[in-house]
Length: 197
Image (cartoon, rainbow, N blue to C red):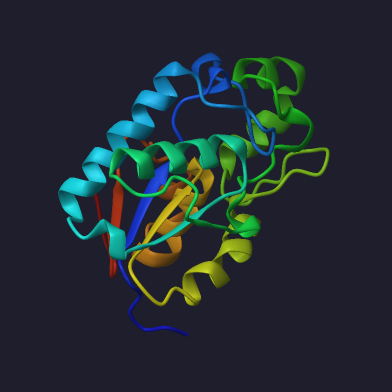
């Protein structure tokens, strides 16, 4: 186990129309909307401000379209070749199973008992239809973190950020499952500490 990890500059993908509508995206491949593209550019500018030698960082993204678009826009915004980054399948968002495409309001109306079970333990709850819990996601992404060898920009998803905060910073699973993960900002994880820029 690595005792001290390199610094992680985590960026959640920019907004999509499904984010705007409050729909569960999970592993559905939804593109950025216009605001999402602006947020990606903004994240690039913030990154350049806090990491002036950003050309020396490693860059890794989830293979989803919204994360690749975000990565390519932010790299272009800081003067780097848009496509020069690595994809890692393990960084894909958790899946909400048969709930994907629904809003939470629709989930609570269609399956009130299951929605209530999830509210009681968001971290460990596995949605129906092949869903994935935050605990399962954490097991999937832990190896990504264990093998980072240099300061790295990671563009991924809200669920992945929550799992990172639990693994790297010791945020409790209850707190991590409910944290806001901002679009257009940079979550800097240094050692056991984290801050938003």
